[in-house]
Length: 156
Image (cartoon, rainbow, N blue to C red):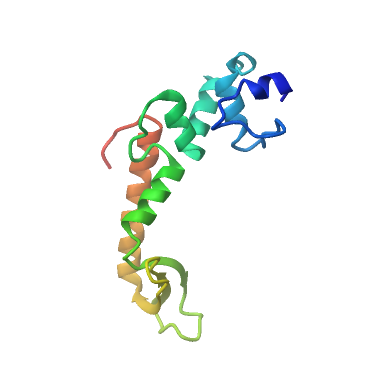
């Protein structure tokens, strides 16, 4: 980005040197300088895509720039932070193994769960049916969140 355009960026979004990576940071430049981001891609302008990208991956600058508070389910990064905060004292499953692992009983799934507050860790076998139910519930939650992000509010 040119020195002039980079100087025009709000200080909380400006990258020194004017370089913005292509995956997520480009959205900062696009929302501040939208004139170059009006091409329509799959029915949406690049500016609209930039706003969504900024909201998902840079929620604090998004909220500051727009003045809007992002609701739960509308920002990947904000949701991850909320999940981490709300579950810091809970064990959260971080990995799983099938019964091919030497320590997992036949027809069960071995899981490792970690708790952030004290860095405790549990390695336990889990009944396959219970894990399948938990996975199905998580997938239903993911589907609801994804639909909310896309503006689709149909029940499951």
